[in-house]
Length: 482
Image 1 (cartoon, rainbow, N blue to C red):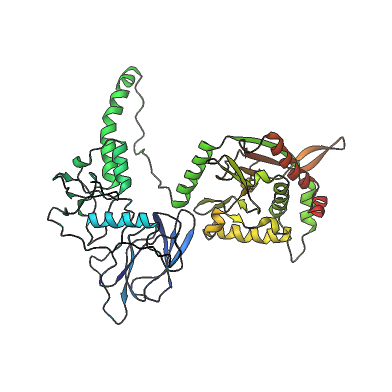
Image 2 (cartoon, rainbow, N blue to C red; image 1 turned 180 degrees about the vertical axis):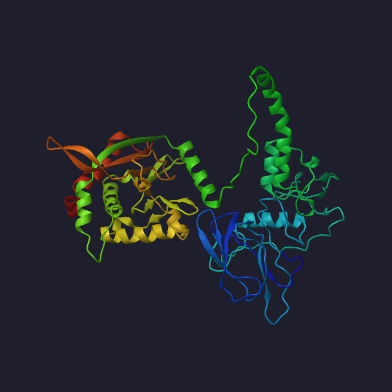
């Protein structure tokens, strides 16, 4: 990264999803390339999808501020573009959420903190071309102008007002002298301050390793490890003395840490919330899918493969939800109300290259079997490479999970919060089955249904399952009624 630049520096903007960071997946330009306004510069992975970031400037690429695979905080430098044929203004100074507590070069810690608080109150930060914010354009929202940063002393501290957004003195604010004359540590990130507070770490005792001596998350985590290691050793010492000696670890044995990417962080949070909040119940049934298998095979031609099995299952699920609309809903715990939807946005669990996502076929209740097949193929293809839209990834009202694609028979799935139910199908395999009193080989699949017991009881769940199972076992008559 160049130490000094003469061009316009584009900071990673808020992509309209309230996210604080993104990972650089692939640069679409190189240093020295000539770019125009709105030209795609880079692919970045947010917690929801992979998006292309367009350029707000025209000129020559001067500096790429992040390598592929690197995570960049919102508000941190992404790329510098030298204006063509004119002297470019100084690099853009804008706040970052300061997740790691580091301020931009040339901007004092206090100025960054003040600007960051302004961005928080405004709702959305810098917005890149082609992406909207929570407030519509021309909404009349005003933001205070950013003032020049005060001089920084040789020790890296700035003499600034340390008031927080409420006007009170912030004892954990950026380094300098507070209005009471006390020296406070250089900390910008509220996440770093909270981490220190939760673990009773004295920020005054820490020597910051961040830019200009800022105390960053790694500094606090190191202090936590130093504090907890002796206590843990003291607790385990008596037990270790009484126990037989353990064999030494093999030479070279150790641990390897794999950072969670944006997709997995979001999935982990959603699944944890689902398990913590929803009293779920699971029911399942074995279904004879022989007739459905034969119907699918009969629809195939040499030039047209016809709808896939999943499209038929989706059609039957949508029909079942029309009969039991309480399952196409969410629970408003604040008002103790079940909120049902007029349309079915059918979510599909898709395992992509970078993690599990659950995009939705929007308006699935208005589609034919062929229409569902086309929509499912298009959606899953895009979702696997991170190209599903933000709406598709957040608008689902019910989820269909085809875990049979992983060659497994059953699963007790986790409900995709805030939905209230999820239906899954295992693999379709040949199994012995009794038909009209005689044993024969049929194509059987296991269907499992997980539902929020606050929303409905077992009778409703069983009714929905039988509606779908009966359609699978008698698909021709079911489609005729749809």
